[in-house]
Amino acid sequence: MTEIPATAFVRYRAIGERYRQETAAENDIRRRLGNATQTLRGLQAELAQLAEPRQLHGFGGRLQSIAADADAIAEVERRIKATEGEITLLSREAERAEARKSDAGDLLGCCSAHLLDLGAQRSQLDF
Amino acid sequence: MTVLEKVRAKIGAARKALASAGDSVEGVREAIRQLEAERQAVQSAPVPLAEAVEAVEQTIDRLCGAAQYDTADSVLFAAQRGQPVGIDVHSHMGANFGFLVQCLRAPLRAALVVKLEEDYRDLQPGLPADARAEKLAQLDRELLELGHQEEALITELAGLGIEVSRRGDADPRAVLGLSE
Image 1 (cartoon, each protein chain N blue to C red):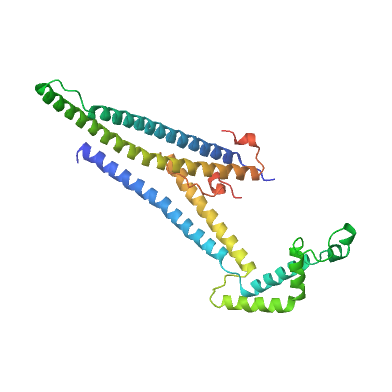
Image 2 (image 1 turned 30 degrees about the vertical axis):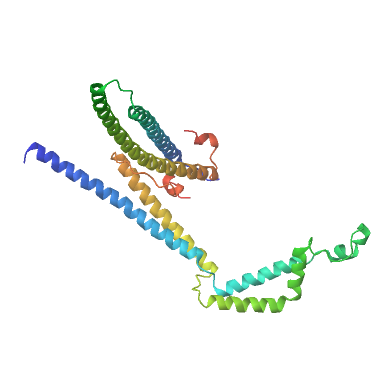
């Protein structure tokens, strides 16, 4: 059986740590993506509510009411657009983070399999 | 030159060094990709005609081997078990086929070789088995060496605070700093 140098285990643990970091980074992006999606749903509901026809009580009141709603609608629409943009960016970022995590995971798997082939104990591969 | 200009110049130089370091890792990776493509081509190239003919002969031998089934059991003793007497074609399909191959061995071999020769007219065969194994071993050694070079660069850059992601399909021996 081959004598495995201690440096190999040090490197292995560094790769494990990298995998852990990539996983945490991806989870963080997914959490932000989830929050943004939630915000978008809230804004869409708000927009639907604002767009609903109101009961008007008189000519003067009607004009005033329409003007106020149009501003509010425009503001919500602006926020929806901004949130959609954020979601697009976060989705791309999440894909990249997932690819990095996947690469790190594949490498970690190959390294642990190789060390086991060389006769390492499973307990030596904990990190 | 003002202090700000000096700092800017240093930042510019650092950026260039960073780009150059990234290029050197990419250069090694490109060399790895090319070697891997060469390895794939060597490995998957058609075997020489002589080896293909040998493989056909081995296949015929194997099929003939399957013919040594218990015909006696199938035909002679079936009655003792209260089964219809005769060759049980369905249960012994492989054996029957093998028997057929055994009977037609010579013409079958000749026909298959003719067919192979026809197919090989448009093929560019690869290396013979020994040379192929030798070439693959040589390419594997070169790939491992490049893997070690790539890892050395990544480690050196990490020491300078520059993180370069490792490839998911990197050779674990290179990444772990092992020779085997």
